[in-house]
Image 1 (cartoon, rainbow, N blue to C red):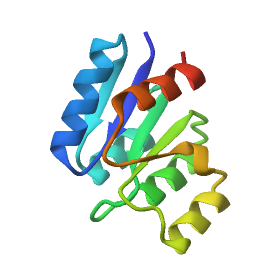
Image 2 (tube, helix red, strand yellow):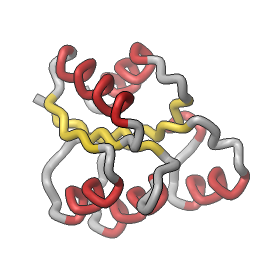
Image 3 (cartoon, rainbow, N blue to C red):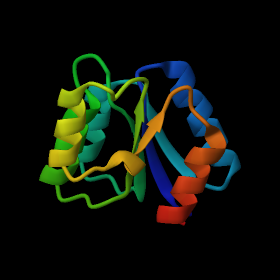
Length: 122
């Protein structure tokens, strides 16, 4: 069973994603706290992919992406955003090796997320 890390500071979104992915056969580690997500990443808990909100208080998605790179966790990442339209955010994502196809815009489309996860993870 594939394990997915889900991080979104909006608890409702994190819960919806967790429940949906579990119903579709995935094991899920879910948190609405960027600091907790950073701890999970740095502890090198094994997971096969991640769905990360880009804008969160304290520790944002960019910091989590950098932590993934630092810890050499080479897993597919899907970035949730209400508005990655800001040039600075797009530039940082590009510098970290992420492209437009890695971004999933809110409001979330559960079928699209599932399709992308199946395509890149299994």
